[in-house]
Image (cartoon, rainbow, N blue to C red; front, side):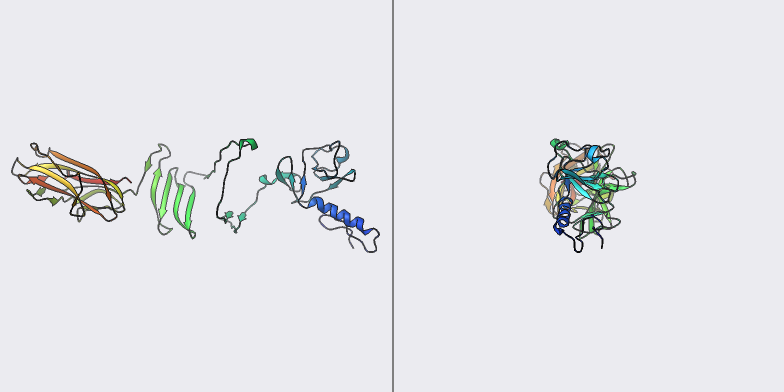
Length: 355
């Protein structure tokens, strides 16, 4: 029968052994030190001059005196003498002076904070792609106080190896990604969203050199009349803005000559109309904006009452208006005193969402 345990070398009670309690107590003492293992320091090479019963140290790399042959050993002062336990790979010990846990790697004791592990799962499992995972209701990152050696601030770094790589944060619902925030394929900072987790649209982009912010999906349009359009006298009619020069989110309907609000919000809308003579110099140009075909938007009805100069006299209207999703806005014109035309390509209707 072996006289001691395989790993911790704890003594076994032998058959027909006298004073069995001594062997038993020796093993209990060893466990008392090894379980929840802690030491005062690992900085000493020479034992303290006046140790107390139960004092514990990790012997330094260049020991002297009673510790001379116990490099890196776990030293316990017991029964007026130093007793040594030689660590095995994987032993861990809490250091009172450093307030941290150290790990024996087979040669020396190293802080567990400097130990590299391949994967870490907290409350959930990991894999080769997701090497760190945590399942929790809440997580906290807090700064290290100056009293503990910190600077009172905190920063989390997402590093990518090249500009065309990705670095960002994905926001998911039931593991399906619906938003991405970060730097994807360039040095621009972007926010992207998705309805299906596959196709993404860019909602916000920040130029990394200038800091300029753009909103690629903001509803905006500019439409013009691409023919000389006749407008009757004393008869308000829709202006035929049938050519959309640009039309983000397809918010302008060139078939029906109306702007359609793709979402509820506040919009800036405007008209730039240029008079062109029909058969009388007494025509007086009037314009306005109308919501949902019949509701004239307050403050948008305007008239040029002075004399008109063909292809030169113009009328500008702009307004801020709150619209609900699906509301339509059309530009209307009328001539007082005589019929007239609206000049092709110079008469425009425009707008964009601001909030």
